[in-house]
Length: 356
Length: 121
Image (cartoon, rainbow over all chains, first blue to last red; front, side, top):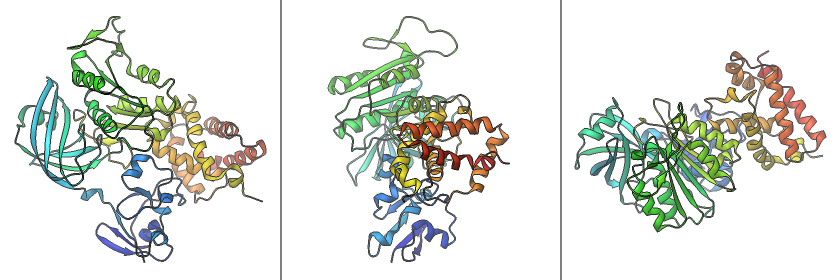
């Protein structure tokens, strides 16, 4: 007999019953429509249970890695004698205490925070966490750091843009000090590297503090031994905004498969000056339209996986263009920094725009 | 005699068709604007459900679903012109995947049968 746990309540499934039917029969209002695994309305996440391949058919690699499944396609009793399935409840995501360990200001508008969790905290580089101050002020921030060894406390790195009037942004820029305590909850988000296709070209593109998750994803792919070329395009309105320029150039020197392409964004209304501008060190940085640069980078790279991070006006349009250029939807992972939109189990996430 | 769904190639064929079909629809300036602000992953899942349905595959899609799903678009000016464009892309997608013409005609007929529901008549 299989048991399904939903928000702490244990429900026995009838023989041959799907998780969806079991939940509905017990009066739990789970969304559903086609009931054959096509429409994905009944997408849920399992905190426990061995999900059969058939219940994850058609889901992207990152959703599969996080334990998402289609409730209409999972008949737990068919898989094991006394299967226990626990449906994850995002309201009870782990919450851990963290201490600020490092504060670095590469530019007046960006602060890089290093946090250390007091207890073990598992996540994937590029996912985001909710960061909460003692008074409850909470924002989502993407993680540029690499996850710890399983069962260890985590060192988290986040990048925060100065946002005039943004409460959390102002706090993290002007008030917080090394040694201060915050609460970290999560993780969430599906924009991260997955193993399995080690020779794929990877294309990572973002602007501003959208670099944070991309930096995490690039470092994660390298740490996991990715073999294909990894190309990271970072755009900023001025050369001074390419705040990890030296670090990324150094990373490219160490890893021959990694290529860093800084670009100063072409301002939309007026034509750009013909000459490039110059960062603190290195070659002139071209003034370009990020969208054109991304589409150029796609040419001649079949099988490329694309990661896009930044404000929604950039990410939403770019994702559509990349898809129209021929990249399968499942190979485009995007993290748009949207404010005040409801969180969804798909790849769009919410946070204060400054909190990259 | 195998079903229409099996003749088309079953679920693997539908999976292959989704990206091609969605790309044609989204790349068509006549109808692309209707997809602004839509989550692309959720939309692709709906496209798959639709393709499964028109190819005679197993599903529980009903006219009521089609009606409610498109009600907002009808208010926004969805007409026969747009419906025809989608059916056109459906046919082109199946042709591209090597589905035989008589099968495409059958599938197009199923798609055409949803016209009243989609356009809220």
